[in-house]
Length: 476
Image 1 (tube, rainbow, N blue to C red):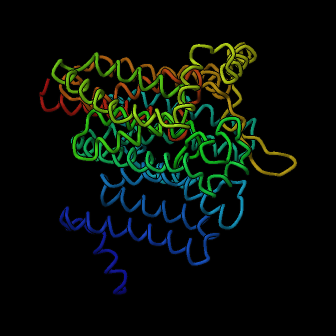
Image 2 (image 1 turned 45 degrees about the vertical axis):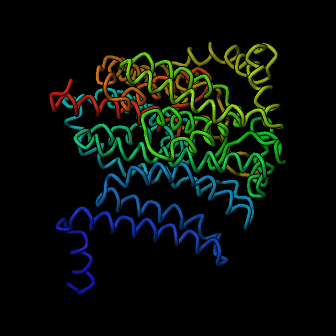
Image 3 (image 1 turned 120 degrees about the vertical axis):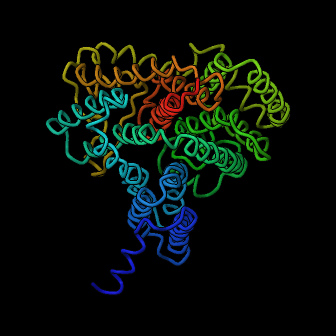
């Protein structure tokens, strides 16, 4: 064995202290960041379309094996920031219709497939039936997709559907480390709200060139606004308005469980950018989440939350009176009173009218990849958006797959709704509120996929992990 091999093996040994392992992990993460920056500014930005996903996967594997807590945070940040990296690369070297760099978050998440296979034999005994049911539904859709659809769209669909489930299962089976996971996720989303919120306000006011370029090339004017200052709907560092709304909704609800000096500046930019996103579905989800939290915690915690909300209102409301912010927010809020004339509402209603009967009569389903089609003119894979998670489930999984998938999701919600730990652990209450409010939004969006699915499944899994942790330690 060579000296290099001996050095590498000693590096992977488990005799390092936690501090040493944390130092190694941060060195690897910083190396990844520096590599990305170097490639971008030294004329090798084009290489990032391959280098970025590959190195992100390598870092994910290392952290998964050596520092599981930092792996969780790294995974969330890859979801939060990769779309911005993609836009910066496109702006520098030209539009990439394949969007291949966006595969990076899925690759990092799929590292947890190792956890799934490792604990699958004992999953039922551990209380993991919801994950097994959902996996069966998705696997059925995968098999049907292989029959009816092209392999690449099927693989792309598998990433969307399976990633949230296996990541959530990973969180659940690590219930013994729940306190550490809770603290790390709270810190991650606190910084997420601060950074993505601040960038969102900057995006609305300035309209950076890379964001305008993406909007022009993607032609998403109807859903993302016009490529001019004060004309965009905010999507910040995320891929589009919907994912940003889901992330900010979860982050703002989690702020109720956090403390520290960053809470109020994060809240100020977070709520302002959340309003500027004009994501009415997520506004409603946030309100539902607040109601769920208020109804599940003790009176002392309720008073603390009410105080926080009032202080946040004092910080944010004056900002919304500034033109043109006031006009944008007011117009969007007024649309609630006249939904029948709203184009978005008309489109969704029309979609249900046209497709509900077809979807419910689709017994076998069209399989994974059915919404990803190859454009015959460009040769590129394009997605056809279905503005309903319910319709998407039945179109994709059919009755057989949807029964398993929805059954797993409903079983999860029923279980977490019974947990009494929410009365003394506000994070459990917030996680439950995030999961249930996200699930309620499936009526008007495919919120079980991509980063929205990560949030839905991930926070319900954290509530389940908390229950097992407190049950094991006899805390009630």
